[in-house]
Amino acid sequence: MRPSSRAFIYSQNKAEMRKVLQENNLPSPKWELYTGAKPTEISFPLIAKSISGGYDGRGVWVVGSESELAEILKIQPRLLLEEKLKFTTEIAVMVARSPHGQAATWPPTLTIQRDGICIQTITPAPDLSDTLKVSAQEIALKIADVIGLVGVMAVELFVVDDQLVVNELAARPHNSGHWSIEGSVTSQFEQHLRAILDLPLGDTSMRAEFAVMGNVLGGAKTDMYRPYLHLFARTPYLKVHQYRKEVRAGRKVGHVTAIGNNLTTLESEVSHAVNYMNGVVDE
Image (cartoon, rainbow, N blue to C red):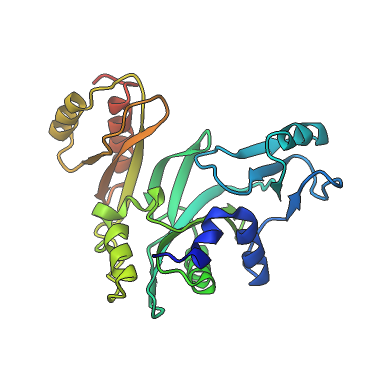
């Protein structure tokens, strides 16, 4: 089974993740485990998280006071508390590692969030210094080695001024790496198979200067076939992925990707496609 339970626990248990990061001097916010037995040492406002479970903003609370924290404890008797960082952007680095220790990363990806859900990614992350790009990849490679990763993993990071802070780990092919299907010589899915089969890892170079991916969230439209026809005719180079899920409001039901050398055009086309598919625009 890959990744092993030894590695996977750091993706599933946020407290164990924080412990291993701290033990290996990897950048983390101030944090503590909290049961209400004594006052927290972290200043308000702070972030409270479920120890396990939760995604796309679920199981995460911004807490402004002890009384608010006490209310959350009624439904989650044990919490991970973290300082609320004043970050400028969020990025993610996909990393792959094989059983014999070969490892590779893709370029850092800017993840754009709305209501705790990633709505768009841009690779490579624009406006990120070369120093931080290299640092983000080095952090991802070190984490992969420390936890004994086999397969692919997303390392999510906050950019705080000129520093990086690890937010969460996801030991699996990840939404922030979907751009690699079209945008990289080796996609995250192919690389995952190469890694778990202990084959030589593939080339992670980009096929174009930029790759922009937009998540399609469920909206007013439930029939996705007609939007496909329009988008295929309007933007022939756009790639549309449908997950064949039941369409529900706010649910990720697919994504679109465009690669090329003009970032402004790519962002515009991807945003239009997403808005057309979920019914925000009708032309």
